[in-house]
Length: 517
Image (cartoon, rainbow, N blue to C red):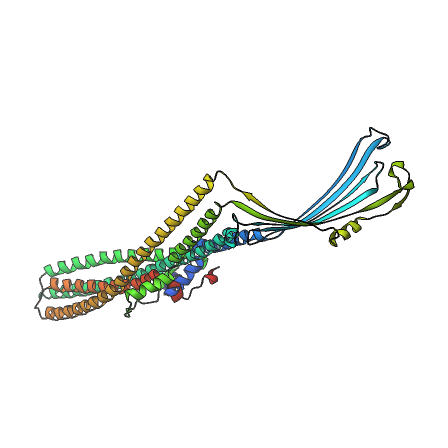
């Protein structure tokens, strides 16, 4: 007896473990849960989320053209050459030359360029008859160049920045479009899974009715109140409905796999092999929507339409730029510079440098030259205009023609897209209205099928109808239940499709782009 108990325990433990394991493998998910997981795990969404970030980087890159630039230079030079005259130098001429420069350049939004530069040098030589040696010099330059025709204007100089900003806005709308499609795909997969699960329940219920009728027929054959042929028809119907269940079970698995793929549950290791159990049930509350209101909402919210309008704006800017490049190059130039000079002054005998006799020196430093420079001791300026008229503007005119054609294409694409949206909205509104009526009609059909089956079963009990008729009414009821369920699912999908067509899915689901970045 004890041995048998041990065997029973050993047999029961694996069953218990399998039951616990199966229970752990199930995961109940609402539609909202599935959408949130998709936003987190879906690879297509992850790819599209990066596009606005890349577009932002492009905007920052284009803005760098208006960042000021600083440049520095330093050089030293020592030259030695033969002296061809004792008057110039005794043996060889040696010159030491050092210079340095710093420059600040700023591009302005009008297309102008402003530069400020400082140049300084030191020159020392062994040549005779020098009055200042070493000599220090420095000059402060201000240069301003403003295009007056070609390359003039805020839009022209900022063309790349504006287009980059437009591309960023377009990429955000493209991301919204992908999110709309993805969310609809989640809803479609979720509700199809719900339908297939509920349809499987209907098939099983229908099978149970057929089995009950078969069992009843067997009992009646045994007592001789029913012909054996009735058993065969009931057995055939049971086998047919068992086959229907196998197909329904396959449809459940296929729908579940599709939903898990969209959600990308494989990204969550602990949930990679779970069985998804949907907890939401489809409803069919009537939603009133007019075509005029739907069109207005779509024109305001459709992200793909916004992206197309942004593309038209970018093409308009490109056309303005190409047209501007056809103009002559007329530029205003203005310069202002302040030099300064200093050095060690050589005093010659009798104040005659030709004597070659240095009797004294007056030291001078580079700082004195810089002092004169920054005090603007010596003021110099220049203002002028330059005009350049290219004789061959074939390339520029080709670019203008290309930009104009691109704009015309974008405008036509926008108009065509508006027509397609109009058709899509009409179809979506009609689908909502039609599917609601289908739900109502199939609900009535299912109620009548239930009443017909109930009445026929009562007639069958008293021998007023045949086994075949009862089985047929059972199948009619199962078909009516499946049709009603399909209509409810289609109505929910048509509502989701309408939200997608209107471009308001993200707003209704309270999903913000910033939260995905």
